[in-house]
Length: 94
Image 1 (cartoon, rainbow, N blue to C red):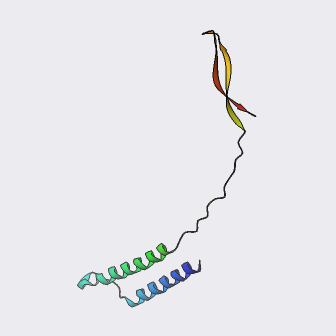
Image 2 (image 1 turned 135 degrees about the horizontal axis):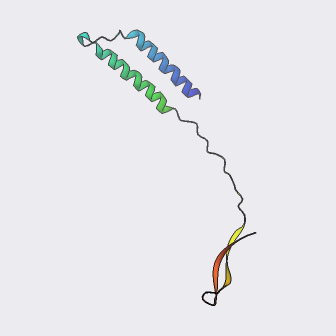
Image 3 (image 1 turned 45 degrees about the vertical axis):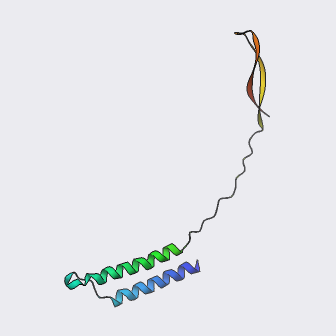
């Protein structure tokens, strides 16, 4: 956190000095290049400061859900249509 704050203060100080040192950009005589250069430098400094800061991420705590104890068993049943004993899987929960 201290590193991020110090980087932001340094960027603000540098940006403030660039604003006071660079004259206003005008389109006549090729002076617009100073404005473009100042914008690129300021953007690079600010982008570098943002890229250097790492987001604070904390993984959520694990959640344990106790599900009912269920199991699949084979159950026999009489099939009247075919006239035989058959079996089928049935879920049994305690």
